[in-house]
Length: 485
Ligand code: ADP
Ligand code: ZN
Ligand code: MG
Image (cartoon, rainbow, N blue to C red; front, side, top):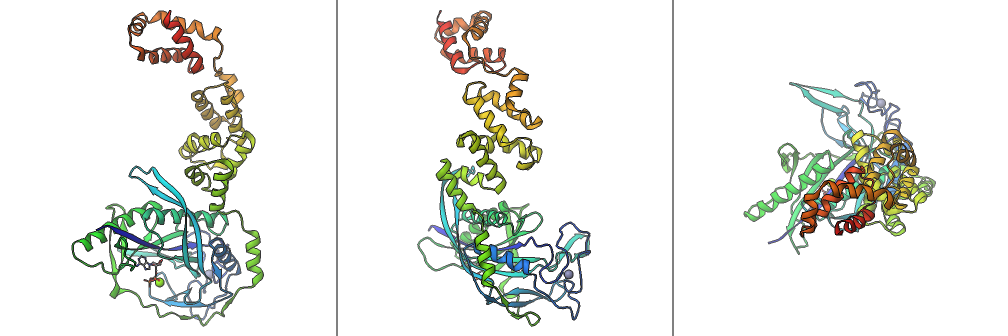
């Protein structure tokens, strides 16, 4: 029997406000432990929460970008549970009346083979159930032997939780959706979505069902996935595990699991019986949240071009393929850089190749952001022109590129200073070819005797003599002519 996975994601995102959700404490990430705290976010008796309007506006912005309908009135609710990093004994969240509902996003998604190469890509719609506002808990640090350290700087930092419908049918789709969500929230500037710093966190719900079956199977939830790769690996493991359970005649048990990346497997964290009953009730310290229509309209007006819109435009306008469009819309900075390059050079494929290839490799290696690099769109445009005019070969261009990256010098200047211009004149190239032929009588004899593959040897020798500057076409033509003599 063939099985099909069903996946839904619950994603927590920290909003990039200056102050916390219900008090004026700073949200700064790197502040000394327990320095950004006050009676409200420490949960001291009698302290009262005040809603941060900026957080509400950011939540609205996110909801619009994710195609959700905004509830003009939403209700804050108490979610009761005990945990040392939750000093109030409850978290202020939203429950049956969230900020926004019924969203839909269009995601460039596909399937990859085992080597990570794309088999196909397409735009696919996924539904979002709801987006609600809440506050973060403090942070427990368990790495000090028997004791636990508590840092309340994070306590009360504003979050939105984005709950998807169970619409994903592969771990790749879930992965691509998370990428899309991250990009969207970064584009509109409401979150850094930095998984390492915990400003983007993901729980994955997954079940399997026989292919063709409509009814969903029993799901398990994998908590606290802290990287894109781990999300995908955890899902792949869990899907296989559930199929094995069913095939061996067992039943999947509804439970919460954790992923252990060092062993690449999931394990039980708590069963359904141990699940919390949060006893939600409306937060008595806060009035219903009433959103003014003008806030929504303002957000709509200010909405920037979103990732899927950019991707579609790049595919259409610049004739990019899906993979290129996906890559070049990673951040607004990369997309802007690419567009500027195309504007200057008129060569979208050439720009895409350089940015995605050599440039990205160097940026990664040197840990430099694209807008902090010495290479500008102007450099790339000039380099492309040097290649197109035959002034330098593609191979030499790589050397020039590295030099541009290091020094920020113009490519023309580098070519001139280092004498890298391509040799395109017969007069200059012929003597070198003749010299190589003279110096290698054995290979010449073998070539003439039928070993035509040796042409490569001669090309290599001439390239060595010219430091790669010989025009390949001219070299080939001349070599063949000379070797016939
Ligand atoms: P719960 O009551 O356990 O919180 P919800 O219905 O609220 O479950 O859904 C939580 C998340 O689980 C959502 O993202 C939803 O899409 C997903 N989900 C619900 N049912 C299934 C299922 N059978 N298989 C996979 N995911 C599911
Ligand atoms: Zn505070
Ligand atoms: Mg639920």
